[in-house]
Image (cartoon, rainbow, N blue to C red; front, side):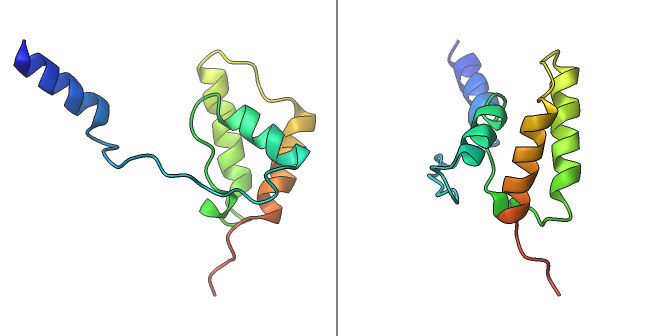
Length: 97
């Protein structure tokens, strides 16, 4: 039994053994952030907008929309996707030169 508990613990926490960190999101009091946080936190902690460049965010959004559909979740409405896109592009990481 003890080995089972140890094994279960490793499965649950092995990949993410670091304690969760607190992020400061840009414009965290805006409606755009609220839309972002609401939709993205349904599956995971929303990444900081600076996690990707503006060139990468549209593909990430499309991939997340596909994940939602694969999980039989309703798609994010187009109006909210536009808000998400604008929020992420406004605060995206700068392109490396």
